[in-house]
Amino acid sequence: MVKRRTPRPGTRPPEETQEREPTDDVVVRVIRSPRRKRTVSARLVNWYTLEVRAPADISEDELQRIIARFRATARRRRDKMRAFASDEDLQRRAERLNEALYGGAARWRSIRYVSNQNTRWGSCSPGRGTIRISHRLATVPSFVLDYVIAHELAHLLEPGHTPDFWKLVYRYPRAERAIGYLMALGHEGGATDEPIYPED
Ligand SMILES: [Zn+2]
Image (cartoon, rainbow, N blue to C red; front, side, top):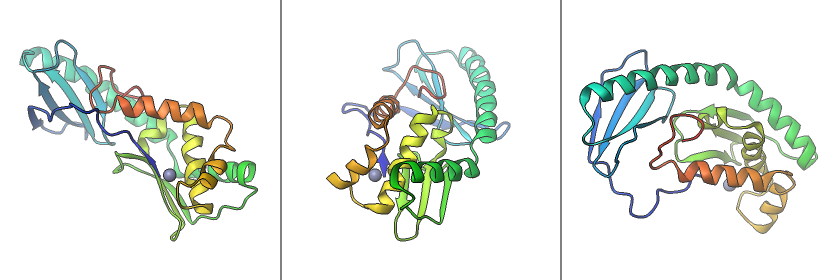
């Protein structure tokens, strides 16, 4: 599996969490934090939930104005992600990578996107032959998505994160760059000043 980085040490739990009324099937969850000075940030935590982080003292009017903008952007991006993020595309990529990297040795039953996987980029059940890919990867550069697929395919050949496993994974030429990209992405997952995807 490819794990996301855990939140930085010292990250405190949010001061206040509230659900707002659902609109256009994007639910906005607002987290106000006294630590946050000026910026408001937002990220899609799954297909349906937009998490907005705001300073504790921002006015309700201003916050609602910003949320309206974020929500519109989130809907556009979400719809775009859905259009591109097909399980058929994952299957094609997996077949191509399996041939190129592993001589076609990996066998699987299904590979698909899931939206309930927010702490892992990908996972593999070698016994069942199933691979799940976080929908959050639908908008990252192709070489990063391909890295996660190559990683999960390698688990079909070598379940543990052993030296042999990493030898397999590093057959993917851009593994190092992709790992760096994912680390940066995961690092910002706890609290970010970047708006929405893919920077969160
Ligand atoms: Zn792994």
